[in-house]
Image (cartoon, rainbow, N blue to C red; front, top):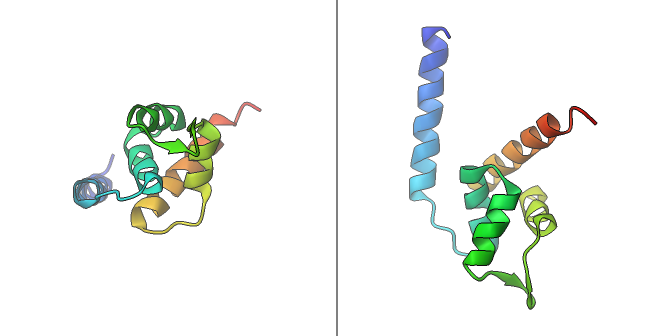
Length: 97
């Protein structure tokens, strides 16, 4: 890796850390987005949200619910980042199909 590339990566990571540390989710959707940016796994996000007691109606959340939240129109910068990550992960994961 070139020094300039490393510097850009460091700046990106500083911004990423600052965004995560300053973000306070207020809704289930924001919590889902926030967790996805950290965990990069819809399944892990579903498990965490269900542990925290989030529900849709009277049922537990599913991976489809969380995927739909992430794919929805971004409401803030965190959501935009989650959507980009989700799209990138989907492309990478489906390359064998």
